[in-house]
Amino acid sequence: MKIKFPILLAIGGALLLTVLFSCSGPLGRGGYESAPYKTISSDGAFEIREYPEIVVATATMKNGNNNQNSGFMSLFRYISGKNEAEQKIAMTTPVFSRTGGDLQEMSFVLPEKVAKDGAPKANNNNIALNKRQAGRFAVYRYSGRWTEDRDKKARQTLAKWIKKQNFTLTSVMEKASYDPPFTPPFMRRNEILVRID
Image 1 (cartoon, rainbow, N blue to C red):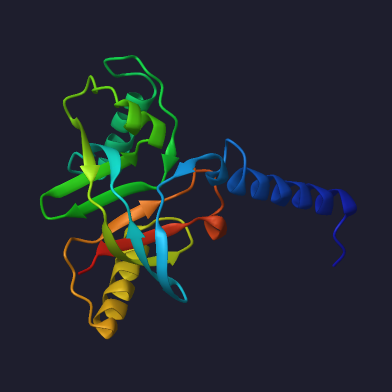
Image 2 (image 1 turned 90 degrees about the vertical axis):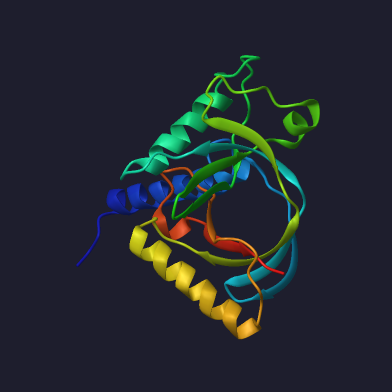
């Protein structure tokens, strides 16, 4: 079956735009400041990382199917100027999410300059500014669109690897999301990470 040239051109253009938007510039992950870390060791999709202390804005998420949306929108309004200084704050990566039992939290990493100068207090009492302690983390990286099933399998995969390495966990597992919603699934960067001793 022959594919017409205009169709090939359209597909090629769409793929090119996808790469540009997802990997660089202000619309993709490459255009955002990212939480710094040092890779200690790598094993395929697994890494051991050292993270320094970073300042984050954290929202407690509501229970229910839209809990992640409620947390994200609260934080997005905060960085959009809904704070005591009416200061707009640049988006960063990753977005950290911790869930488990009664724990339902989402955190935005604050840009280094904002953290250094003093982040403005949120107008929303549901948002707290705090320091995320430095530490060593085990990390599993995978692609694809987020689903509960894929998230569960990723956590199980990391847990099995950690067990083989004889590491001791010192926190609950959390999710790190790096990409805008329009990023194609195969280009997405998702991570599950956990503190280790």
